[in-house]
Structures are given as structure tokens and as C-alpha cells.
Length: 260
Image 1 (cartoon, rainbow, N blue to C red):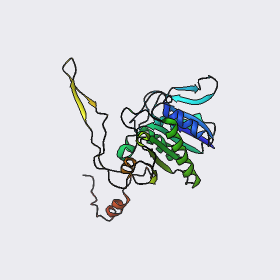
Image 2: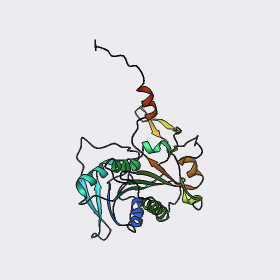
Image 3: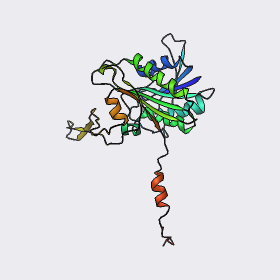
Image 4: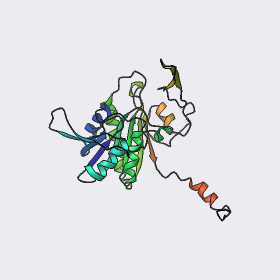
């Protein structure tokens, strides 16, 4: 099996290194990831500057890992599929991200965006993220092993080409994993705060607070299940059309104007 591995934390992040090691148990893994951290880049792509690419090797200087791209996560997957890989992958995985990508975070997430980009091109794609608590010592190897087992389970059921999945692992420091839940995305708004400051020249500026909390985690959604200690798996889609509203609106009588 040929696996393309991407992320948004950067090619040197510990999460992608740990997940690469686990995914090598399933097949040949090639990494194409941002040269620097691109957290919360969403599905942005680079248009006005060149995408510089550098080959990356293991510490021995001999074992090829993949390519570092000076661009966004979606750039990495697009470039990998269209230019860098000699053969198409059988699977695209994005992660392992430092921090959960549950609820509406999927719309901001570069990790999820990389998986969505692969799904655009009809490849099965899985985004994987690890939630953690403040000041926790992250156990990347254990989290990566959990992610790999979820990937294996998904592949066992032979999902159709272009299938897209979002996987979140709860904080391991809270205790043993309680199980896996296939569950919908929470859509409640998150509580955000900004720290207002004034610079030495008297200009007001703001720092976004790292506290990004969902105060209304609806029951039986990814946010609530994560809080209860479950790994969550959510099938996603990038078709944003509201089909129910579309059918309703198609019955409306629309006035035709002459353009005057």
C-alpha cells in the first residue's frame, strides 16, 4: 500500500514522525508536509509566491522521508498528487495533529484541509488529531498507534474512493481510551477571547487567546464524546449545498427582470 502523509504542524513535528512510523506497518509512506507550522491555515492555497520544495531525510542522511513544502497543507497534497509522487497513493492521511479538530474547528483546520484536498481528487483520506490538556507531556507513539488502528479499521470496510474521515483522539493523560464512537460533528459556536494590548507607540493590537472552548457541546457529537474519553470518527463531505433548502427554493416563483 502506498500512503501519502501530510499535516499542518510541519514536517519536523513529533506527531507526523510518530504517525509515519506507525503507518509504515501498513505500507510505504511518503511525507509531503509544510516546511513550517501552518496551524489554522484552513483550505488556503498559495497563488502569488512560488512553492519551494526541499527533500527531507532521516537523521542518518540516507533514508528519504519526503518533501518539505514552503506552503499550506492543501498546497502539499495538491503538489504531491500532481507533481511529486511517481505513482498515485492508495491512501492519504493527515496528522497526527497537536490539538483536536472537532466541531467547527474542521473549518479552520489545516490538518482537515489536507485530507479534504485529497478527497477532491477521489482518494480515501483520513485526518487524525490528538487533543491534549495544558502543559501535558504528549505521548505521541501511543496516540499514533491508536490512529493507525482506526485507519486499519476504516480500510477493512473498503470505503468508496474519495471517502473522507475525521479522527480525534482524547487526551491520553486523562486515562485509558474508553472506545471508539462513530459520531457526527458538533456545530455549536466556540467561545473565543482576545487579549487587548497597546504597543509602545500607542497602537492597539490583539492576541488571540489559546482558550478555544465549546460551551455547548451537544450530546452525541464529537466534542462531547472526546470529553468522555472516546476516540471519535466522523465521516465528512465537502459538498456544502443545503439540499433540503435547495429543493424548497426550486419551487419558488422567481421574477424575471429585463435587466433595466
